[in-house]
View 1 (cartoon, rainbow, N blue to C red):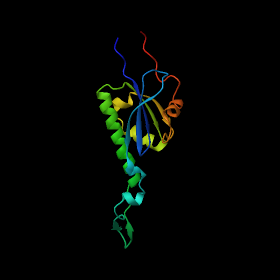
View 2 (view 1 turned 45 degrees about the vertical axis):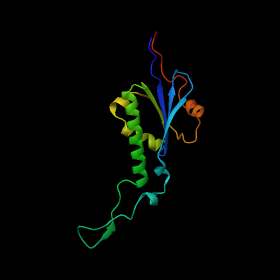
View 3 (view 1 turned 180 degrees about the horizontal axis):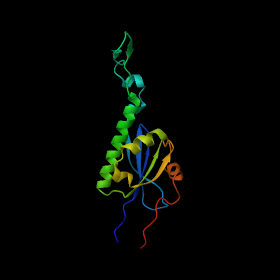
View 4 (view 1 turned 180 degrees about the vertical axis):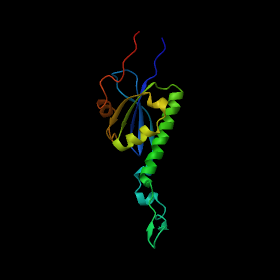
Length: 154
């Protein structure tokens, strides 16, 4: 009988992502790798090279700063969420896992969810909206259900 691939648990915020494996439904987490994105820790001013451009109103003599649609910090978080999704998709293709759990700060969880393709989204069994930064593996595990998944009949 072939061993089933483990479940992966992704614990992420906008600056760090830790990927864990759970080899049993009620088992402990084993840390596999860490992805980091130090740019997310920079202040907004350090991420933006200069002030927004200026524009004239189409009617009248008003002049105003052009607004940026997405802040530089949110852009960095979106880029990192995309990088995480690409890493997960590579693992999916290689069949490194067959189930996923996402543990992320609420806003980042939304960004990450938006970057997952339909094949990855179909593998997500659990989502926990809590900030995992600084949490140890056992604290992350405690936020998840006692049984992460059901085992197939033998």
